[in-house]
Length: 492
Length: 96
Image (cartoon, rainbow over all chains, first blue to last red; front, side, top):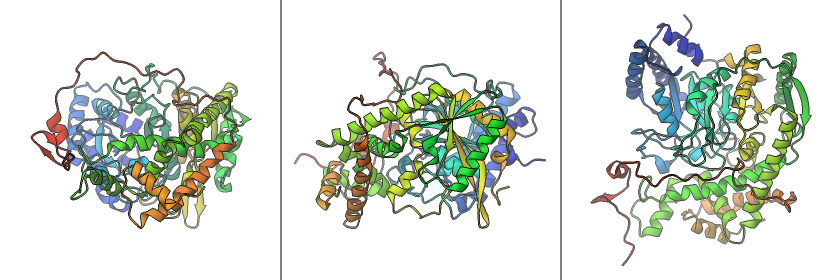
């Protein structure tokens, strides 16, 4: 029999429905793998074994009674530790929240739980989602299952490492500047970031509120479509949630790709792109051509300014969002504060890590009197220029394609002392966040270096609310290729 | 652009962050580099561009009826508080 952790969500759903295995058996199988394999990876901060078995038991009862309506009923999942989970430790990868037991569920946690999903645990992440390598976590770096000396990407590095190591068939994740897509690329997964506003941000600990969006890490685009259907949709508790109907993403997966117009972004093939990665992207584009798609070169002239724009807008919003952490009502409080001011300053100074403090200070400065116009207002204007570039491109083409990340996974420690080099990792992903566009990364090959081979991701970006089209385009590719089925050595 | 130690101390004070003696020079260096890096934005011609605060056009803040939806859960919320007495959050003395 095929191992349970080799099956996609879609296959696991079929198996559950056909009674080939139960949800409790599934939960036990993955909890066993977590216990055995997680210590070397550090992908999870919290394992919720008991709750998982109880949820699985309930799912089995619903399945037996024929009352499980969602295709996700009984399927195991790991939540990124940025999502509040009622009664369960929710740390956001920070010392600041290392004692925080969330008093309520995030909307997506609630929706997935109502669908019958079984939560196995909470995934490690860069502190407050600020990082591209999962090295800023208070709980220590996450290792990449393809090579334990390499980073898994960030900020959703724990979610990515867990799914790549087959500790769960799906994990939730969030993407503010590439935090779903870059780890997906570096660990050989399908990472999906929906349109801004498509998925509720309620109960998702805020980093940069005009950029943050929740999504998924899965093996396939079809699995992403399954999960998104239950995650997406209007939520009155999120004031930026968009009130438009959620289409049936599964229904449009098999549309033929003949005549699809793919925009090749000229600027995506510049900016430190490694030749071996570029070659794999070109090969993926040839697969699309064979399926009948047309390649059209387009230019996004302001895209090279996306990283500096982001590093004004995101820290500004972060400094404002993180002002709530003051040691008064929840979170870390310093020992023996001399007075209120001392309590604020030392609780924040000790509770936040180095990168989070750097971003809070960057944001504080660009919003401070005398500098607002020069930095923040200017960045918001350039943000519009970048967004307009995308809008012009989508008048000519259906989707845009290019690399997700300029290089495969890099060594742990290689960039940690050089923020600018680390920030430039997100050069291809940040544009979609600034413009609020849906975007994804799908595995498209591996680069061999010495005795390891590391995955590379193809990025696909669509116009607002084109989730169904993106999933269709990725699914078509995955019908023609096998990269999404590769499992790292030692995790088969 | 080069920040001084004094600049960084000011920013840290505005942000209510206590920095250690070892951390200060690291931030003087890295924040200076970041502001140099974002200075690229000055190259863009933005004279006729409206600033963009939100990625979706014509989105507005919704209002909702002023109705009580949640029940009182202060006991649950206060379980996360560093110090509580008589249902009140305790902080160091503010008024002498």
